[in-house]
Length: 191
Image 1 (cartoon, rainbow, N blue to C red):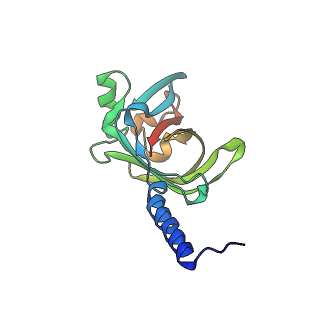
Image 2 (cartoon, rainbow, N blue to C red; image 1 turned 120 degrees about the vertical axis):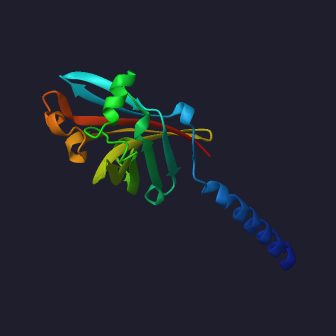
Image 3 (tube, one colour; image 1 turned 180 degrees about the vertical axis):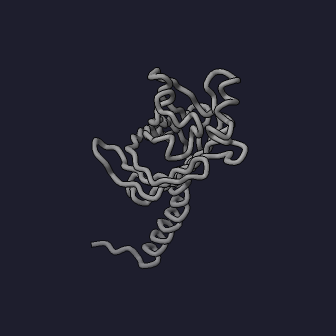
């Protein structure tokens, strides 16, 4: 039986530890948002007709660990002035005090507080959603698809607009604009 000298084993162990120390920061890196391939949109009903709109500017910081989803974190900030209903006049109306009040509250945000494995290979994400100075705890399922060094996070979150004071005064009437709004997101990141 051949024995390796102690010096040789120490050298190999040291080289392996060095390689691991170099590789770990790369594995733990926060993913970069690919804004051109990502989207945040909403769907609501006006006079019982579905209306789609989107936000043109947002940022997302996602630190996803597939081996330990519970250690993952995410935060999203949406610039409300980037809201687009497809018509400049409607866009300006939505930014007024009665709706988003974007002058006083320029951003909406989501910050995760927990992620855990859910049904059908999805994650169950919990966190705090803040819009127009109001915050609420929310949860939603999230699907994740990995292709090479790209990850796609997709999901939807139904909310009640009146819980965030979106639609004040005469616009509180849910017969014209429904209370339920569905936030849909498709976030593409690269490592």
